[in-house]
Figure 1: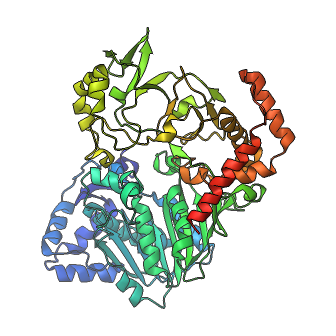
Figure 2: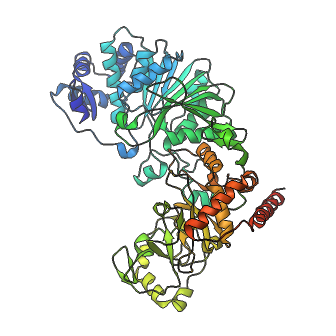
Length: 600
């Protein structure tokens, strides 16, 4: 429902901002005979504490003309694509009230992206000792709506304290908060609000000017920056900027952000050691509050205190005992500090290197089905290809079974390592070359910079490990804590796509031993203690590399190991023994020794 219809008191738009009957009538009466902007601003300051209500005389004239018109309604723009989910006043009031239960009583209130001003109004209602309020907002209609909402609040609550209020039209990335911190270094500060729930790349794609000047703000370089780690949440940037600026001030921060932002802030705290403590995450129902399916929470911390490195998680609506605690335990980042002790022993470094599956970003051409003995691409074209470069491929959804030896999809593997020349295809596999060449334009439209200046038909995430006959794999997307044994298909290794992670082996025994260890109760307990259920990818290479298979192989119950091996033999018609167990241990030991020498 349109916001105008929801509030029957709103009768029109001025400067594209909602204004109520009450505010419109007040301004009409009190500014009708005012002709100078100086006099108008003086009136607004004396009545409501608002500084620089008008920037110029043109704004004064436009407002006077607009409020004299009986109706001036225009539709509300949808700014959700910009991550602009305006906080309803009820939630803003609940957040402010929650802070009063912590005996927080700020003298300075700052809202870095103030929107329509609901957090400012809620703060004026809940906190009685405020001296100054600063709201920063890039979208000019919201600047006006904030001012109108503040006037409306005071017209309904004329005896409330009236601090000096500055609603500033500026990008949060251009605004310098340091003077505010310096001028108020002895006062209690509260930074409150709801920064945009959107990434820098999303805003960039919308040609938004509301971006930090240096978009790769965590200084990822090379491959990490190209493959996505340089993409970050705008709210994370804003929150870290605010923490860095105000960490030496007395006060608190309370911001509504996505859960991943809170996780990343706690993760960075280990290296940054910001002077914040009592870090808390209060989970909200985003569907109810904003009608979006995003995992989000109220992030809270206390400023100017000895750094702490963990976070207590609560239910915002039933704020009693913490549901769980996550954060740093020594040098380990843990999602559940309470259960972590059950598997702490195997949290180390995997001797085998986990790899991501292959990436081609060209599924319409490279992803194939087999129909009546021949290949069909996603464009429904029948294709004639040599079989040599065609391999079965598994996606995350294919890893639900314990053992996989047949694929439903196929893909063309043009390289054996990243960057390999592909001109050999023309001479050795002319049918494949003709097919790929006919669709060259599709390859050319791939946007990722990883393909820039690479040979034609290049793929990524390919290497010697891809061609290992036996693999143990897990989906990065699904929240299922089980690993799949992947066997060859038609005497060719099976590939996995880039949503999957894998270990590759030349010996079936080594693959099965790893498979048993990875599906053990101890491994599951570790993964449940170091993964986050609301993460975009539950499992990542960083997470999987923490499973110390060598340590696990030394503490696992040998009877349990034999029992699992017997089950696999009976179920899948294998005839495996533990005769190579010693060789398996020795290989992991030698790899680990090599790693130690490398970093010595």
